[in-house]
Each structure stands twice: as structure tokens, then as C-alpha cells.
Amino acid sequence: MIEIDSLTKRRAGKPVLDGVSLRGAEAGVTVLVGASGSGKSTLLRCMNGLEIFEGGTITIAGHRLAAGGQSIAALDDLRRDVGMVFQQFNLFPHLSVLDNVMLAPRVVAKVPVEEARCRAVDLLDRVGLSAFVAARPATLSGGQQQRVAIARALAMRPRVMLFDEPTSALDPTMTSEVLDVILDLAKAGQTMVVVTHDHGFAKRAATWVVELAAGRIVRQGTAAAMLG
Ligand SMILES: Nc1ncnc2c1ncn2[C@@H]1O[C@H](COP(=O)(O)OP(=O)(O)OP(=O)(O)O)[C@@H](O)[C@H]1O
Ligand SMILES: [Mg+2]
Image (cartoon, rainbow, N blue to C red; front, top):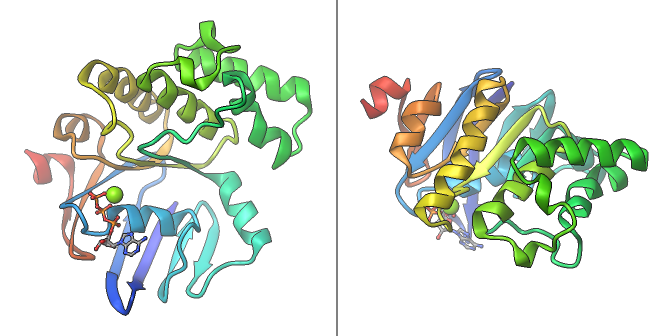
């Protein structure tokens, strides 16, 4: 489902990712760990076409990304199959919770409005937010907003989900409500890559753990071997 080969990314001439190669299993949870600045977010962003890279290839959910950037059409195709959730939720503030979740299926995938609504209602139920469909994001807690962001990404039925430190902006109670949603997704067989500093979560969720340092993979292995 995910295969990265010799990925190299530079910023201002300095390598940020330096020959990164990895494989992520279908229906598996790959956890990325590493010190601040090691390149975790950059790697995730390359996997969703948010960064142009200089060398290597990424194959993800059947899409092949080459060095030098992709066409707009290829990026649109990629983002139907690869969803991403960021640390800072990034919800649309002027739209209701329901409309946030309906937007991409309507606009990008041209899903009919009633079907998009049904999908959104189901997903909001799945993340425990049925009572908040009509609310604006600003009236929700951080944990609730992040669960909306997860529902919004899932609305495109992505084959791979990418999470970049999804709980690091949250306090401990909200962290666990968001991690429980992500664990449920993992149990349901969603392929995902998660950047996290939460070792407890990584131990429970990860099928494979990859450690980056200064843009290179320095260790990788099972959760038991890496975090035990
Ligand atoms: N927009 C940018 N412009 C220039 N350099 C950047 C930019 N974003 C990140 N970098 C640099 O790229 C390197 C990798 O950053 P990245 O954000 O991928 O690290 P990270 O592992 O996600 O760190 P953190 O744990 O702090 O989120 C760092 O040296 C960082 O300073
Ligand atoms: Mg980061």
C-alpha cells in the first residue's frame, strides 16, 4: 500500500529527507517517531503531494509520485485516496460541522448531496459527534474539532490516512478521545501512517515503527522491538 524508495528532499540546499526507503503494510499502522526537526512532517507531506521532492519515488494507494512534482490532476486523484489530519485541525470556520464533512465529497468527488449528507452523518456518529452536526467548529473543544477533522478526511473514503501529531495540541482527556477514534479505525483495518510522540498509543496501535533522525531512518521494527 505504501512504498517509498530513496526519497530525498532538500530545503535551501540542505537535505531534510536523505534517502528514505520504507514499506507500509496494507491494513497496517505505521508509526513515525523521531526528534523535532528530524523530518517526520516533511515525509508525511511528501506522501500527500504537499511537498515537492528532489529524488526517489513514493508509491501510495496505487499512485506513483515522482521527483519534481505532480500534475494537478494527479494530485486530485491522489488526495481522493490519501487523507490527512493535521495537528491544528484546520476546519473551515464558516461552515457547520456537517458541511465541513460534506464539502470534499461534494466538490472533489461530485457525490450527490443526499449521499454526501448520509455519509457525513454516519461518520460524525462514528466519531461520537452526532449532537454537533449543526455547530460551528469554534464552539467545539479541541478534541471534538479534531474528531471532526478525522470524519472530514474519512468522508473521501481514503485508502490511506496520514496523521501528523493529531493530539499534540490537546490536553490529556481530549487526547484519549481522539486516540480512541484512531484506534477504532486501526482495528477496522484502515491503513494509516501516524506521527506521534505518544509511546502508549504507538505500542497499542503500531504494526511497524520507523524512527527518523536528521532526515534518515535510523531504526525500524515491530512495536514490541522498538518500544518494548
Ligand atoms: N517551511 C520550511 N522552510 C524551511 N525549512 C523548514 C520548513 N519546514 C520545516 N523545515 C525544516 O525541515 C526540517 C524537518 O522539519 P519537519 O517539520 O519535517 O520535522 P518534524 O520531525 O516534523 O519536527 P517536529 O517534531 O518538530 O514536528 C527541519 O530542519 C525544519 O527546520
Ligand atoms: Mg512535525
